[in-house]
Length: 354
Image (cartoon, rainbow, N blue to C red; front, side, top):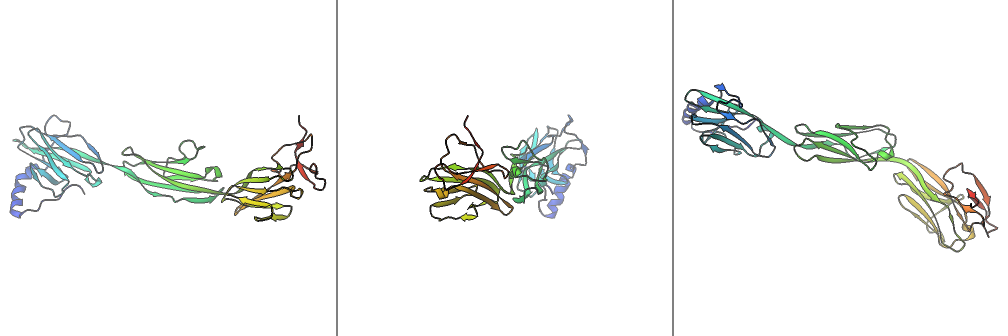
């Protein structure tokens, strides 16, 4: 459906006007816009949706009558408006140019428009094609998704526009390089934790700025302890043991000394846990505090643990090389802390200074 609609007038007047304009119907000799013979309309007119389109037709003093038509509907005949669409207005009607304007153009206005003229000899026509471009619009996109590591995902991004927009997917990550897909669909098999984050869908067709939407992909995985350090603290001083773990969902931490779980509020000890680390604080270290502690991190996908040692001053000639106990097969030896003959614990990786 294009610009059109006939003006409602009494039937007698309509008959008279139709007889006067019958010669304008483009049944005469067609004239291409590139021919030297008039009338000469513009080449194809391209506008964006919402803009105004101006249709011009060059004429000369041999023309006695002139009109613009959309398919078989008369829009303007001379100075008389024949369509009901208020967006269509007459711009110019002179001895050299006859032009109209279609305001607030929409996609249904696209199509052929004909400039028809009457001379002393016979009617002639010239045709121009109106092309309407439409900015891209994303009409469907996947929701945010959560998946366990190793699973498969499929993301969808559907967009409309004229011409058809180009769709690209990009992983928003410092390690990501370039586009990961140039299609409506993005398939990832055996997803890893490094592939979590936001994925950006971009739809572009050079009519307007690209339209961008994002999808958040959360990859769940069991805890992995990334850092844990043993600490040497003299008796009477403040001591801190800490372990860090990455996990999705965030890990829950528990501390043990031998088989006994340490809890918040225990005298002289504070347990502080955040999303990615847990800290065990001793406000006044005693000989009984020395020993091997276990930090356990767990979530719904699994758990892991690491042994951390709180020890006293190092004996002369020995230095600590850490972090310790991040592997189950690390060799350990049993020693007593210097100056603490009644407390024994395990040291890992002792060596003499160079």
